[in-house]
Image (cartoon, rainbow over all chains, first blue to last red; front, side):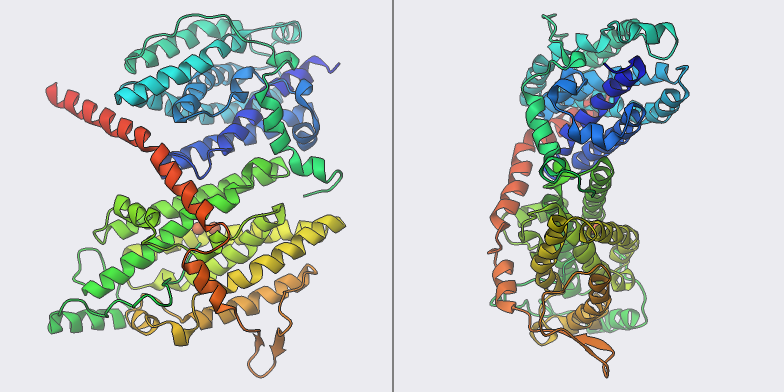
Length: 243
Length: 332
Ligand SMILES: [Fe+2]
Ligand SMILES: [Fe+2]
């Protein structure tokens, strides 16, 4: 069992890494060139964050390319498949609004490294949230088709929102010592942000549903294994090589 | 990345001047160009000049965008976090090049949608080089080193091309291309100095990408009917063969420096010329690829067309939303 800080850094790093990997799948295939560039830009920021957070937990490359599913600690939301552009945006919308609030608080961490990473990343993530919010509004208040698609996309992602606000006994002591953020306290502001954008998008708040959880303890969906088998292919096929 | 003007060998080249131009205007234009003045969008220009530029710039833009695909093929499999980030940034740069170039071509009166339509229906070409597959990670190194390297050779002179918006786009683009070239070479260096399997990958990539890279400069001068006109109008500043030779001279020592062998038995240093002599290029292969017979040409076009068609609802939504906003703003 790893120590608390290591575990916390893995969770933060894995969230960024897995979502960055997912967004990288869009590269060259987005609905228009400008969107291609924005999604790549977000992916690039996330891979950068992952490198820094995983660096706290150990050798970032080793962690990224040599762990298997059970040892990844990202939330289930980020490993969800891209689906169509609406599904991708719905995922980004829920995640980036959360990550922005999280990083804003993390800049106050007693751990100087975490605080410094968050200080740099919070500006990036504010842009990700704005991008996602704007697309939510365009798709919700666009055409009948875009509206139907974003409703579907949200429907897929909605059950993964609650996990973002879970605190377990790994994080509890870190919150007490001022290292980790108490995400439970972010829920109210997140709910407001989500509600505000949904209303601007003329969309209804999806109905509450049973939360899907497990990522933080390595109990993932089926999607993560396939993502890893692709991401880790070279490191697995040529053990010990440096690139 | 850049492509020289591509045409099917059997395709008739467009008549040099399609409309009778006013001789006085034409003479004044030619004098300006000869004096190395930049031509700007509002300036008078001969129709043939405009057409040649639209064809060349849009072809160049399409090459940047299609070129995102072979490299994008390895983003999800890049072997380290740093390599992944560098590759993401590179492919993003290429998309950005596509954007500036479409914008430069639009100043000549052709819309981006028209250009994309021409690409998707096969009327417009893009660089033949992107119709080859990226099989291993070493191909990402080879593309950066050779393809971006060739692009720089082609594009540096274009910073002084006679059409202002094109020349200015090239200045921005060239800076980024040299960065790409160095990063690609660095990948090759790491592989060439790595395990036997990695060395094999690196040599194999050079074997496959060398000749297609030389073809990127376009047909030999004697078969390049538009070169003379384009050089006279300072659209091009050097001939295909001149640039190709410079590429060979610069690249061969780079290969040697990392212990890789250029796959050309005829390659020899010619003391008298101060250049390398190199073997014959398989132009039949080149023209076949121009005609759309490259190994993964169908995949490339399918990927572009699918992205466009599957994204139609997104573009429609964005337009519909913008129209609603404008309508609401007007009502206030
Ligand atoms: Fe480029
Ligand atoms: Fe490039």
